[in-house]
Image 1 (cartoon, rainbow, N blue to C red):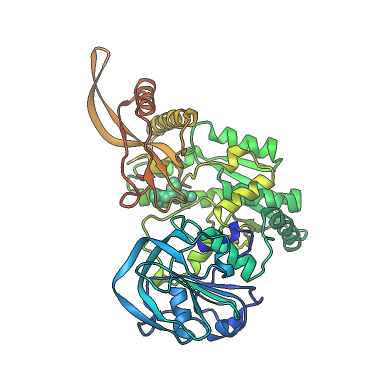
Image 2 (cartoon, helix red, strand yellow):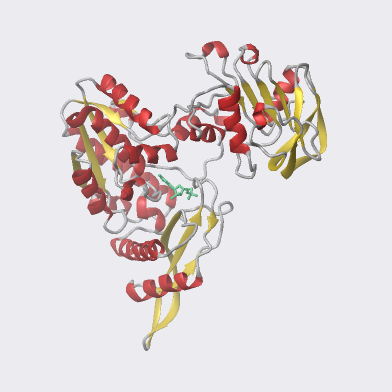
Length: 496
Ligand code: XMP
């Protein structure tokens, strides 16, 4: 979140593990931010930082744990609080002349989350702000341009957090706002041209934003040296293949080969009910189909992938510290090592919102850039149990109704993702004069920023009623509709 905020403010920023040695960096950073963390600096063996970073002379901002680390390393004193301070607090700026608090009112709301507190400032530092429970809520050494805040400026709950980060970047570190997607696109195109030279590249398009933006960027750089393959696995939403392929051909003028593999995927999925097994089958089948298509492109040496920065950070995180795997994400695009193609990942330094902005700079239509996230294994994860042509038809039709009705509704905020799930539950109903015994469809609509956490969308009752009535009337095989009112956690977004 800190990195995203910094980039939103127009300064490029990279996330590095705390063990990073200052002398191992190929380029000296213009400023350093030390982040928060759940550990306590008073416990031996807790994460610290290469002393060379602190002696480097570049401006430093320590946030929460980062500030405590600065306090300890520069000779201050910390104590453990009897009980941690967590949640909102009122900040009083006591040193309003500090550039860190320029344009920040004397009193404002901040978000706290800490168990240790600075009780004696290191030499050279001054206290800049306090809260009721935390005497040193901010400290700074203007001479050395080193600052620390006990609260979290990166979260929305800190009213003036953005202004404070901006003050650090502009007023303290004197960094110009020079990171933007226009300049990214220019540099990326040059880099791609140089990397690719006269060679041929191939890209698997999924219909999703990432692969579309990656392919368009490469196509802008090397034109016809790029071939795109779109595997139609038959698990996409209503009209999606036509829309996506149409956009690639007509709007983006990409060279796209569409492979109709619908039968093949259905056949491979026959009898599979377990969600993980379905994901694995789809992943494997996708790779096989893509390999065959790639074999038809003579002399291809490079594989374009829409890998994003969060994937890069995650893969660098030591296993022991990584989160538990909840579901495997078999994205179309995660391709086999046996193919021995050199990877070209032009988006690997970008966050998702930056990728969407790059897409807009490149002129991609809103239908692609603004697309809802959609799992690689497609509707297979929205059918609980076996995937059959009949069940695909039901979920596809129900999903089209959910999307159509929600798209047409004036909602604020507009839900982040919404879809239908076909459950294997059957129940009794009555339609016309007859008794029915048919399936239950669940409707899921969530608000979220990134899919990591989510809340169920408070859709108006009349909208829910329209969705329900239309599904039951228009989709044979469904006689009951339920609305999912669980947040994530404890539930996930997809039912699987
Ligand atoms: P869950 O169900 O894990 O989903 O709470 C979080 C977000 O990720 C999407 N999702 C996927 N996206 N490949 C993807 O690209 C996948 O395999 C996949 N599975 C889930 C999901 O739609 C939600 O937005």
